Length: 254
Image 1 (cartoon, rainbow, N blue to C red):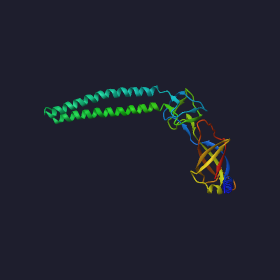
Image 2: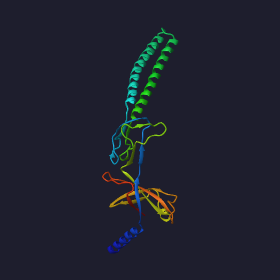
Image 3: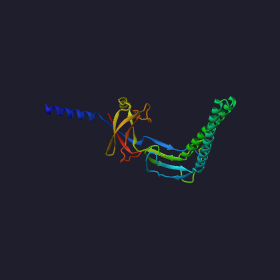
Image 4: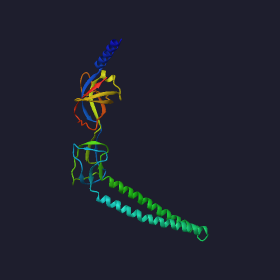
């Protein structure tokens, strides 16, 4: 009985292996971004070089921010001044309310005190908004990595003027470190049995990664006969593993 069970298991494994399809393809970045800033200025410092690994939130590049810093300082001073004005207007309104309750002050004078308080509060709120806008503008003079990535290119240098009036100037190109894609082309017969999000495997050299299908093309690639359709899969990359776009890969399809 044990021999029969072992024989059946072996035949089953052979059948599964025989049904697997291996397709040659190549790797690509799963998440590649080109970063810029929506402000004009002079590049003050570039903190990274192409080929470097960066962590999420790491500083990549900064523009000369002295003017933006001055605007923040001016806004802070204005807010401090208006805090005092609003406090004084509030005291005046409370005093007017007390006198009105004692029938010493007319309703018109009470209304004027209330208007003064509202005006002081409106000026304070507007200046607070201006301070927030100045702080945001200051933050935009610094570029940070949105996620752990490889630096692909830095097409600017310190001292270079960046003019972002109509179109943003590319400053740093990044690719996510922990996620890659493999692209292959398969025929219509094989495409018909594939499903998005299905589990597959990718081999790169001696390494093997669990992957999932993220795209199955509807239009053929090129003019091959029979027609070939693009299939893309994504897989996680361990922190101690470095892969490159364009590397050969083998996709194991069911």
